[in-house]
Image 1 (cartoon, rainbow, N blue to C red):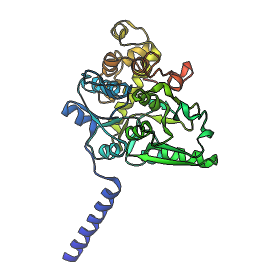
Image 2 (image 1 turned 180 degrees about the horizontal axis):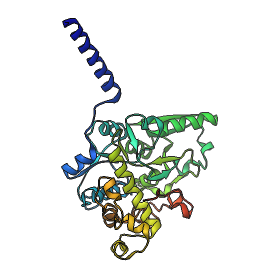
Image 3 (image 1 turned 30 degrees about the horizontal axis):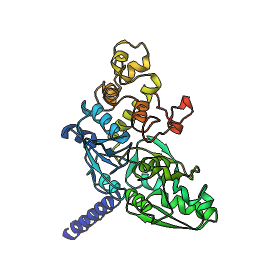
Length: 343
């Protein structure tokens, strides 16, 4: 009897070890945790102008930061209830899997290996493409001119594989020098430890603001990849993932419906559009289905505006980055941005 009991215990322990060994720790429900704790803990880029950087008042601002504010407004009713932790590529995913962060709102590309590695992308927030920046006096005009060049990028980034694959495919030689993060890679480029720097075109435009002589550098016109980038949550957090997904969808839908930060109150009170009424919870119970109040979308839009307003405010044509919408325009304006029906 004792032998059988001992054998059974060994079997149970083995199954427990196998289960936790493959799945990792079981995390508490993040949506409930955020509500009880009273703030959203966002992992963000350490310093990327337009997306996540500290302004001259010592406040961290940017496109990514506004999404954190929108989430807090929708979930907690107050956009200020956020905690921002700058994280690098190598630290972000482990921190998210361990439950140290609620969400990564960062410039991380959605790939199969990452998505199958204990984290989930909720949807694409921006579309980017890998590009290369060089000094004007280098004489480089196109990627083929980089044959034999030294190239800086970040360790563990999708840029490593993309660059290696592209140069091998086109029978070009290069030396790839990697650093622990994009800031360090860009610093190496500034210090002339490499001939060029590569990352997403949007990231290059943002980082070029840090150059002491930006007029002496050019971003080459070719793009060697498509980089879908968006917020990331821990695997298994479907309630939290659904909430974040539909908060971002609501910001995109608001732009399509003509709802702005300035007219959101007017639209909520007086719109006859059934889509607007559902969006604001005037009709239906969509908020309750997400585990949120029925005015979740109204609160988010009231806090930060619609998707287009956020883009224009931080990275658009009238900002130092001077980015066009491109693929990040709405689907009915030549881009890829759309929200599934909010109904």
